[in-house]
Length: 136
Picture (cartoon, rainbow, N blue to C red):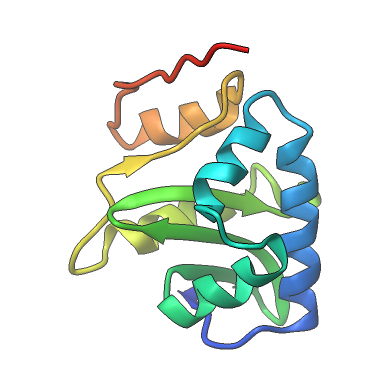
């Protein structure tokens, strides 16, 4: 598994990004997460913006892009792995690479009910410490 910062956009990355956004916005809390991540920026500009800031990391297995992570301001804001590659260590490889940075992340976001993501974070010793509640 090769994990590295994304420096240029590509068709596979664009497709995986679109798939991730589509999947996350269907989940409970997903739309609110996207609003938080976008911070007012138009959806079609987000991917290029994160690449230009050096905040997006990719995971490749050989020539195949299998996942990515968005890490800003010490927070893993998004971590996405191709559905057919889940439970194969891709998310762990992304997280381990981020944690080995000179300034590693200290927090991460997970959607309500996403037990797999919460379990991943708990497996490295992180604890849930904030739950955001919002009125309708």
